[in-house]
Length: 236
Image (tube, rainbow, N blue to C red):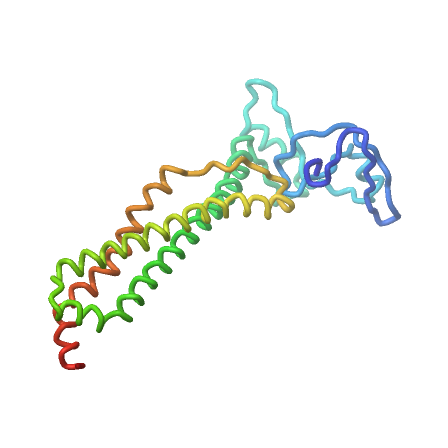
């Protein structure tokens, strides 16, 4: 909440309640790992006074060194039989829940990066295939007029590699930029502003895959080049 609302020690804080607005001053700012949007922490007595709610949602237990977590959990359940659905989670379990949230958050950003790069790669393949389809007759006439098929294929492969390289140069920075934009867009809701770690080695490894995809888009039509010569003769 301190980050989301730019609040510091000593700043006033107004909390809406059923009986009106309660005014407080911030006594301290503490790290909060349990809520996504932040929380205002008060004593139990103050909370009950301003809300009129006697219920307890969560309790933090600090165990002495050597205490058994399982034994404490069993004792808590015995002391609170009116809460049959009570969950007693250890520090490791809470850490696993928090890290699970971060893992999901990072997975979304990674998926977005892959999606942007994949989309640009598909656009490059489509452009390459569409260009070859529009030039079928021209390629047939070029071969008919004496251009060696191997020379035509090399030219087509060179064009495919150029298109694939251009797509990678456009898609890789766009995917990396999307990470920072996504973090900035989600931070007002999560309060999290992690540093952007660009996976440069992985991005570089995608270059051969993009070039391979555009090369395959050229290779399939290039195999039909002799047939294009016959089609061109019939067309003429």
